[in-house]
Length: 599
Image (tube, rainbow, N blue to C red):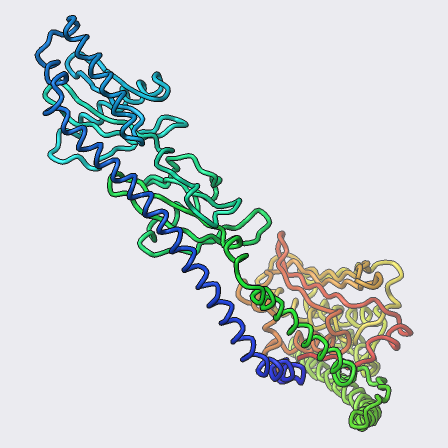
């Protein structure tokens, strides 16, 4: 049934069209309120972030100027170039430089360390406020790269990122002269100020990430959140971004992402604010709006339940009744509903099914009569086919003046035609069919003495099973016509009959298996393929009329329970296999009473 044309669909669409403008207005109001909150929160936190980044950048720029001025204003650093390495004056000058660096570290609050490197003597002087060994190792490992970067005219970026395992830093190196390099080290965690940002909640925070998306500073954000933020670095030119994180439970969690790229190094300042915490500041009516879809669903469900009891249930009963009638169940009768309108429809339906039931009985009886006439017509069609062949055999023997053979053939032919008087029956016993085949083959043996023989191999207690008359004879006749060619050894036809069991979905059934084999030339490959594909039934007026007649009589009588198979034997010769239900005369009268649909 087309749901679009149903009353249920039309009712749902009508109610939806009535309620849709209201819900659209409420939805727009909710979306607009969320946008206002996002704009205000992002503006406030972006101001904090910009101020923090500006302070950091200013300190880094001042440190740049300080480092560049060392070679021009600091007499101790200048004197080291002229003093002998390791001399007393050299050591005193280094100590004064160390004291100056320690004093300047307190002035530049973000700077963690100052260092001076002697490239000629590979000597490093380091003044730091933190772990001396860790900072010394980081500076020593980074100096070759820093010195290589200074070979160009302009250092890009101005501050390089140095990774030290669990501790990352920014490093700036300047060349004093051909022998000495001065530099500064900044702890990345000193550049990150998460306490400045509001609305961060329990799941928000700030982090500094590199160009590759890796975290450079400590952060309250977990690794999944940092990875999510790094995937959206390209959108930092926007005022803010709304990004989503899929939790382990499959739900989506949204964040407001703010960010500013650094002008002094290849890093980005990132802030993630949980949207859930921001929306807690919305007015109370915004929470009520979230409940409106639930209220609409309750209204719609209540209306649907009312209509279901009043209209849809009686209509469903009527539809199910119509479907049962379409499947052939004509004894369906519906109960009368309470509605006067549907009462008339139900009464008309019951009256219609009663009339169809009587009409079907009349049509069924007419189909039985038509089927019986069709079967008799097919049964009688094969008799003239053999009569003409028999007369040709007698004519050939008379032409050869073999009068004794003509007499013997006349006797067999009389018995053969006597059988034909019984061939108008619906079915005959298997032993009667084989006796008829024996007369036919004896006639052929008289025609071809010492060149033709036959074998009847019939299973025990199979003679009482019935089959349509003249089922086997067309295949024996074809074997002699087509297989008995250009032969020097005797031509042997073997007819076998066996019974087998076939397991069906309901109960086991007995199958009568008939085989007609010979030792002749067999089927040509092209003809065999056509027979296996069932093309013998395409032209009932052609050369395969005997085969066409047999298979059509089997289909009329047994339908899909009977069939033919054709093949060539490995040792030579053709083989035809017929299978049909194994039935006695009593069983045949009770089976397959309904007409067979042959397409």
